Structure formats: structure tokens, C-alpha cells
Length: 354
Image (cartoon, rainbow, N blue to C red; front, side):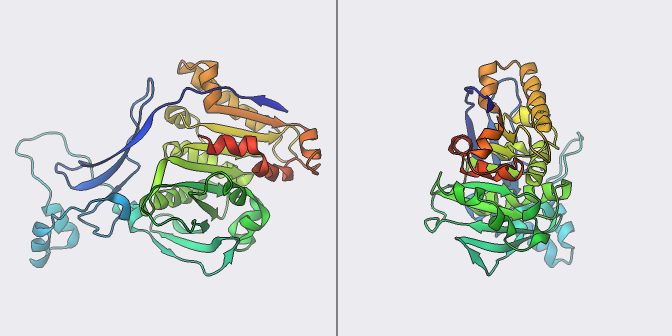
């Protein structure tokens, strides 16, 4: 086994809830902000925004609603369209100045998404729930919610993306029948919701659907923003690496198993999201080269940011397993044996220890 690892400089992360301006000149939107304190980086901004006064049912855990719709209602009664009414409620600046930024796209607001619940259960998971997204279509997933969860305290959440055998067209629940990451995760935190998406491929569409699903859970459940974990195996790793290239700030840490990196690197470095790359030295499908390349690219970007080897080691791990590791566990095929990483306490402990 070749293991590149080392201690990490921990960066203080905290969330602020504030009713503040988002693209408008008045306090109108309830914005949930994530601010990440870190050296030489700008603060990360806005994970999601719920327009409480426009959508009174938005985000149960937002903690506040704004009652400020009198003018809008009057305009509606006068026969104006809903959009015109909303525009009429916006402030008019007394003096000329730069044009204000547009309001968020309401169709992408996760508070407005709806879910059709599944009817089958398997080992504690409710199978084939469907998140209906206006922009990203129907997103199928299974979910485990601990009996102890009642919304009164924040829980961790774990998203696990399967390989080819677990994609939706293979059959409902095949991701859970063929992989153990979701079940092994229960051993690390009893207060953790586990989400197992069943997507259709490993491309950009599935990556955007994953982001929509993550945002939905962050909006509709009481989630600890410091405990949002992700894992992708094989094709699921390709998808999740694209997610990391788009929205790494959503996650506390990411584990990639027996896969390759298809996403951008710079956003991961900017967000300082820890990444663990595990793969067999002789992986029959990918080889170890793509994982090594991803490690080297991320490492070099961190060096350019001025981080020491010790600091990088806490943010980035390349774990190459040799043939003996697989054979000692009864496997000779290293790619298929990548599912064994789910039962490796060092690997999974790293993820849930962040």
C-alpha cells in the first residue's frame, strides 16, 4: 500500500443565519450564508436563498418568515400580473446609479421542489423517492432517516453515489443491493441521514442533479453544515468529482473510490474541501494514473497557495492499495474490489472524522 497522507491545518468554518439583502435594495430575502474563514481566500457566500415573503412555505428550518406582502397583494387585486406585482414592490432609487443585480432564479430555489415518496423499503432505506426539480428533472434516490430524527437538532448527512451497476436504469435499489457504503456509514454516526441517489449517467446532468438533491436536503432538513459528507465509487466518483468542481463548498469532505477526476480543481482548492482518493494499484478499469494525476494537480495548486506539506496532507490523501490488500480480503479484481473500501475503517473513519 502506498499512502500519501499527513496532518491538516483545521480551518474554522461557521454558518450565519441573517435576514439580509440579496440582489435587491431592501431586506426582503431570508439568506442562509456559509462563511469559511481561511487564509488568502475570499469568504464563501450563499449556499441557498429562500424567498420567504414570496414563498411562505419555504424551508422549515429557516427559522423566520417575513410578513411584507400588503403592497404586492394590493397590486394583484388591481389586476396586475404576479410578476408585475412583485416588481412594483421593489424600491426605486432616488438617484441614478449602477443597475442592481437581478433577483435569484426562483425556479432553482430548493424550497420550491417537491418530492414523491417511495413505497418500498430495504434495510431501513425508503427506496425510489423522486425529487421533482423544475430545472433538473426527476431525481431518484433512496434515503435512510434515523428514527431519532425529529428536526429539533442538526444531523449529519451523507451522499453516496454508486458505480455503473447501481444506476437507475439497472433497477430500483440496485445501488444499495450492489454496494455497502450507505450501510457501513451508519457505524460512524447514529445521528446521520444517508442519501443514495440513483442517477442515469456519470455526466454533467447527473452532477447538477446531485447538487439539486444536496440543496434540497440542506433546505428541508435540519442539517449540520459542518457534517455534509460525500462519496463516489467508479462512475459515481466521476459524477461527484464534477460536483466538487462546481459546488465543493457544500461539503465537509469527499471520498473518491476506484474512479477518475472529471471536474475542475480550482474550486476545491479555494474551498479547502478535503479529498481522499482511494484506488487499486492495478485497477482494471481506470488504473491508478487518473487518481495520481488528480492528486498531483490538487497538490500543486495548494503549493501555489503557500500551504505546507503538512497542511496539504490534511486536505488531500492518495491511497493506492496493492494486490495483497485485495487478496487478503478474498478479491483478485481490484476495480470490483473497490467496494471493499466501504468496510475499511481507516478510509471511512477519515471521511466521517472531518
